[in-house]
Length: 409
Image 1 (cartoon, one colour):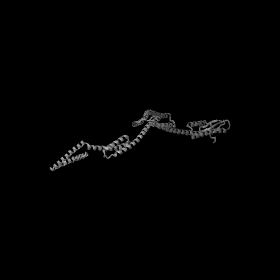
Image 2: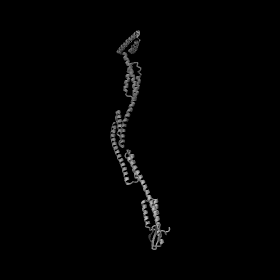
Image 3: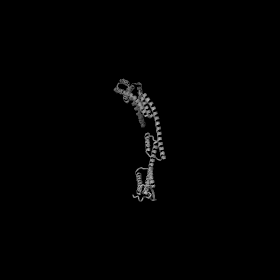
Image 4: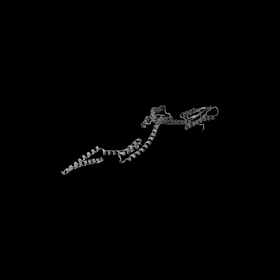
C-alpha cells in the first residue's frame, strides 16, 4: 500500500496523517529521512491492523465475553483516535464499528439465549417444586424419599435464576421436603410405638404358649392355642428382630404341644383300630344269633357279647355309628322276641284281648242283623250305610283276632 495518500513529513520533521477532517499530526521524526519516518508510522498502523484482525478472530471463534471484547475494541479505538500511526484510519474505525456491532449482536444473542435458559430453568424448577409438593403428601415413604433426594440433585444441576425468584422457589421446595420429613418421622414414631405395644402383647402370648406346651388337656389346650393365634394376628407386627424371635418361640411352643398330642393320638388311633377289629368279631358273633329260635339262650349269649363289648373301649369315631348300629339291630331283635313272648304269656293282656274280641264280635253280629232288617224293609240306603260301618268293625275284629292268636288262640 502506498503511503503517499495517507501521510507526509514536513521540513521540520513533523509527520502528518490525512483524514476526512484534514491532516492530523502524528508525531515528530528527527532520526532519519522522511521515508524512514513514514515507514515507521505505517508499521505502527499495520500493527493496529493485525491487532484488529486478531480481535475479530477471537470474537468470531472463541467465547470471549462481550465485556472483554468491548474493552479491547475501545482500547484499539483510542489508539486510532490518537492518530499516532499513518494509514487509512477511517477504514480501521469502520472495522472497529462493525466489530462492535458484531459484539453487541452477539451480546443480544447471548442475552436472549440466557433468557431462554433462565425461562427453561424457571419452568424446570417450578416443575420440581410442584412434584415435591405433591410428594409431601405421599405415604410411599421409601419411594417418595428417594425421589425427593433425586429432585435435590436435579435442582443443583440447574442454573440459578434471579435471586428473588430462585429464593421463592427454593423456599417452597425446601418446605415440601421438610413437611414430608416431619410426616415420615411422625409416621415411623407412631409405628415404633405400635410395634412396641405389639411386642409387649406378643411377649405375653409367648409366655402363655410356652406354659401350655406340656399340657395333656388336649382339647381345651388346642382350642386355647387357636385363640392365641387369633390374638397374635390381631396384635400387629413388632420390630423385625423381636418379631422373628417371638414368632420362633411361639411356634416352637405350639410344635411341642401338637407333636406330643399327635403322638398320643397316633397311639390312641392304633388302639382304637384294634378295638374296632375286636368289636367287629363280637358283632359277627351276635349276628349269628339271628333269627332267634331259643330266646333264653340268645339272651344269655347277647349278654356275654355285650359285657365283652363294654370292656373293649372306644373305636374310631367315623366307624362308631356303623359298628354300634349292627349290635343294636341284634339287641332290638331280642327285645322284640321278648315282647312277643310276654304278650303270649301275660294273662291280663290275654283277657283284655279276649274281651275286646268278644265286644267287636257282638258289634259285627248286631250290624249284620240291622243290615238284613233294613234290606228286608227295602231301606237300601240305610243298609249301605250300615255296611260301611260293618267294614270298619270287621277290620278291627280281624286285627283283634290276629292279636289273640299271638296268645295261643
